[in-house]
Image (cartoon, rainbow, N blue to C red):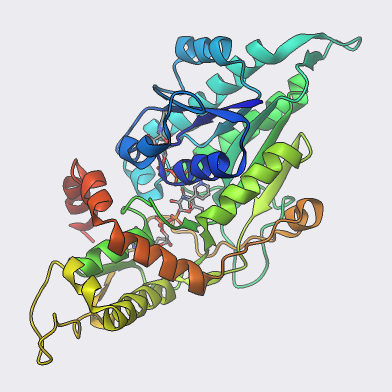
Length: 379
Ligand code: NAD
Ligand code: DAU
């Protein structure tokens, strides 16, 4: 039986990952370490925690004593590090927090793994490692910087981050590679493009747009909306990480992406059109709308769900123009490919939000309103 330490699993991708792991692998044990910041929500994973196959520990990945204690107690085979401050806009507001969690937290996990997993030394002086262990870092395509109209990020693309968030993720990747080169630590890194799907916190583009439409609010598009992101359904990302942790070559980086490039404006318009279509075919979904005016047909009016909701607002500072992943390596070595088309994934995602308004209320009940006002008032 393999035991995983999964950090940050009360957040968006980590939660989807542990649900996926527990569903497809029978003989595993998962220990979750999460500080439950504004982005973490225990309710998201409450149904998965049974204190046998899935154990939850609230704590900070920077806490050396706690992390050492967990390694001693559970004898982890794998560490999968999702825990991070993940929002670019927040990193522009408060860069230092990103250094603490994303860099120092990663280094603390690497060191704890080294203390727990090193067995001795070989004749050249390098540490020898417990068989079968792996430290996996969940990284991002943002470490490569920004593309022009053409080309893709490959694993050989030079690292060139621009935002405080991506600079911190890049530094973390460099530490992971430093532990590989200096101590021969068995590590791997996945660098993924923009995810979307269930449990995505509504500070990020797609869930924020869905939330605002349902509340009849304007839809803030930064700049002229021409920036391109390469969208991947979250479960496809989870499958990629699972493959890399179990079958990927130690010491390697794998890019994970969907070949699904869209401008932000396309994403917003598609989201508007999809919500409108779903409400037309399933009038019961209209009950979710905050704005409930009765139209001439006697049903709740949805004629206002159209592109007029879009507002172009002040651009993000240092806004990367285009991200696009070349996933050739993971496809050829591990047979991974993005299984969920955007057309299917976006409908699945929107329906999930329509059916889980209680979750949205729960995660936005704290400081979200203050954050929204602060972040968007001067735009
Ligand atoms: P998220 O913000 O939704 O979740 C982050 C989780 O980490 C939360 O549960 C939070 O409570 C926890 N956390 C934060 N600081 C912590 C600390 N110091 N100690 C312990 N836990 C802490 O993030 P996400 O979107 O799920 O991203 C997960 C990882 O994937 C991040 O490392 C991010 O850089 C990376 N990534 C995200 C995307 C994306 O599109 N969202 C794409 C590529 C890579
Ligand atoms: O590429 C992977 C990265 O994707 C991850 O590493 C990050 O953790 C994740 O947050 C995401 O970063 P982005 O900055 O690309 O995602 P976000 O959803 O914040 O923004 C997507 C695009 O939409 C970006 O070009 C900015 C724009 N945007 C965003 C918001 C929140 C808007 O136009 N309006 C908005 O209100």
